[in-house]
Amino acid sequence: MCVGIPMQILDCDGIAATAADGDREVLIDLSLTGPLPRGTWVLTFLGTARAVLPEAEAHLILDALQGLRDIMAGGTGGDAFADLDARTPQLPPHLAAAQASGRTEG
Image 1 (tube, rainbow, N blue to C red):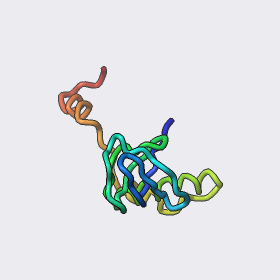
Image 2: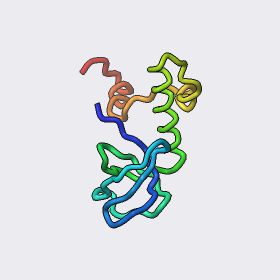
Image 3: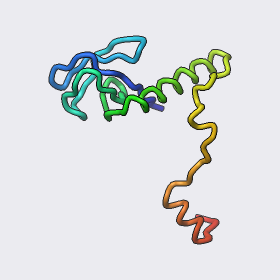
């Protein structure tokens, strides 16, 4: 499984940028996003920026990843998933339509 890591652009030179996730600075590829200004948050996979993220969403993902690290170390995860606690799971549109039409099997 590949996990996307939010990173903030520190410096950009064409399609290469230095970015940080709070703990480390790395060189990332911006071929899929194009050049981005300093301070922009991106979701990275294997050293490549795949999408631009709003800052609030980047922080939610970073909090969730820290919560997972905490749980894996034997902790509780704290409030890392507070945004999901009160949310009811939603079916994808195609399954919601099937359910609304009374279908119960594939």
